Structure formats: C-alpha cells, structure tokens
Image (cartoon, rainbow, N blue to C red; front, side, top):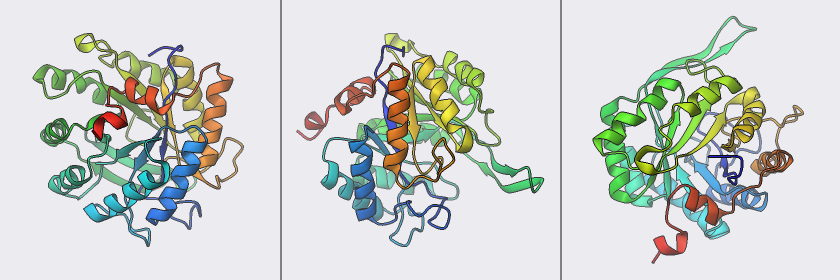
Length: 298
C-alpha cells in the first residue's frame, strides 16, 4: 500500500469484553447493532467487524445471534458496508466457529495468526487485571483457512507480533493461503508487540506484500489509549485503519464516545487531515480482493 491508496476505515462495533457499565453506547440487540451500522456508514466507515452478543449483552457464538445481527445490519445499510465476523475466542470449539461462518457467509472473517500471552496490566495496582493464553495453533489456523477458502470468505489476518506476520509465508507456500493478503497489525495488547510507530513499520516490512505478484492490503488495530497515535502512524505509512468500541472507548480529547459513529467521524477527519481519503465500499472490496456485493449475490 502507499499514500496514494484510499483508506479502508473499519469499525469494531462492539467486541465481546466491554459492557454498558463501561460504555453505554455498546450495542447488544440486533436493532442496536443496525443503528450503529447506520452511524458508521454515514460517517465514512466501509467495514464492520462483528462479535455477536445475545440481547442481554452476553457474548454469543451461536448461529442465530450472528444471523440476527448481520441480517439487521444488512437490512439497515444494504451493500454499503463489508461484513466481517470475528473467529477469535478462548474455549469455544473450532467446529462451532466454522458453523457460524458456514451458516452466515460473511464477506470477511478475522483469523488470529498465532498463540500468545494475552493480558491487561495495571500500573496503579502493580498487577495484571487479567491474564490468559490465547491459543491459535497452526492446525487450527489451517482448518479455518480451508473452511474460508471453501466458503469464499476473505481472511483478515490479525497479527499481534512480528512472528505472527512471519507465519503468513509458509501458509502461502503450502497453498492454503491465497494472495493478495489482508493483514491487520494488532498493537497495544500486553503479550504482543509494544504499540509504537517504529514497531508498526517493522511489522509492515515483514508482510509478504508482493507474494505471487499480488499486492497486500494492511491496516492497524490500536488497542486502548495508543489507538489514535497508531491511526496517525498507519495513515503516514500508507495503511488502513480500524477504530470502534471494541478497541477503545474514548476520543482523542479523552471524552467517552457516544457512538461508534463518533469514532469513525474522527478517524475520517484524521484521514483527510493527512491528505488521504476514505475508500468507498466499492474501492474497499477491490482493495481486499473480494467480489462486489451485487456479483456475490448473483
């Protein structure tokens, strides 16, 4: 990617961890997801990353909840957004994750590219708020890729460290991973790569960008307070960006966001201030090498 490329602005609409006690704007019901999707699209977002929830806010990995949420979003915004499902979780069988991909057929699905310690640390408490092992062995990565290939779902490779980026090349060589790639560098999680502009550049330098003669697409996912700095870094380096209530609840001035739309509006403003422009949804589909919606529905 280069500075001349339009910017795919993605919204991580809810996540699975934060709740309304932390941020009242987090959507729970399909209708609330749809209302947030409208705000996202109206402010320039072109891809919506979904973790499903039950109407009481409980995280869900059931087909019916993914269907209800994605159906409500499609009914509200039609083809104006790319729908992207999460597959990352702890303790949920791989077969269950493939089942909801098979039933719903999203255009894109996130694919975590390696195992890691996954934690949040509190300097004030001098201890971890939580700490777990996020398990993503190669055999599960390959099985998910094979299912995505069969279902014509574009994988979004979520890489939390340089080693995760390095895991892409053997999968390309095996033939299970098709180019061009869609890679997101996830930064700001304790256990992953520290969130700095130099580290982002190092991750991008390791993406097999011209594998098979195909140009990779990449972006940044900044977690918590470092998000806006990383958005600026990605825009400067020629990449795309993701914001949303899964990743960060606050605007750069420290105010809590009242909606995903507010976060997307700020991301769009930063894009334009950097001399770049948001991609249209048609451009985003072309950049990610996924079919235009009318073709996929034919």
